[in-house]
Image 1 (cartoon, rainbow, N blue to C red):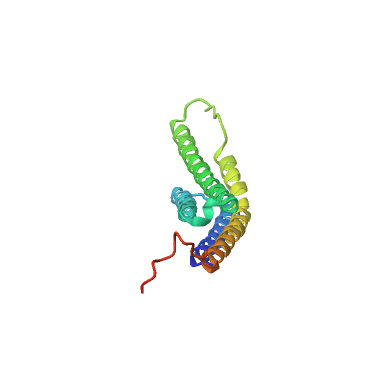
Image 2: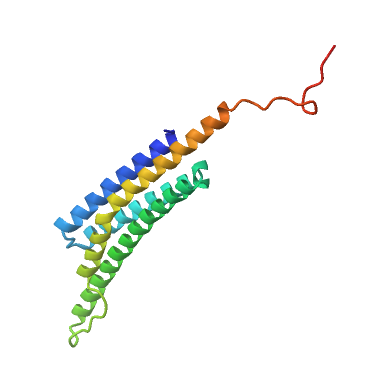
Length: 175
């Protein structure tokens, strides 16, 4: 297991734990203040940034040239997409909540709301976040497989004896 693989696998595990923690927070402590909601969004954006960094880091590894490496990369991309969508849903919920407050402050005729409510957007974010730890575990498994196979290929290449010299490739003899 290479240092790169170990780092990516551990970072994926940590990302999955952090996503689960945010999911638990959103389920158990609904954000009532603007600042609390903004902090939840920033946490989701941090998760997205970390997932994209892992994607970028792994994409530079030699293992990505093989099918199992591309499969690992696909899983890392799925994790990045999921947490990015979570961030977007939480941001949309905050924007909708602010718009609702603005309309309520106008005390105009009964407002007409179109689209999902802030609570519905947060529910979508929670559903997505609940899947991220499993996606991270699956991604780590593929990263480990890809890196392990690449290391085996590298060892096989380094232990292959050199081809015997032929008359055309043999070094000249000195007398």
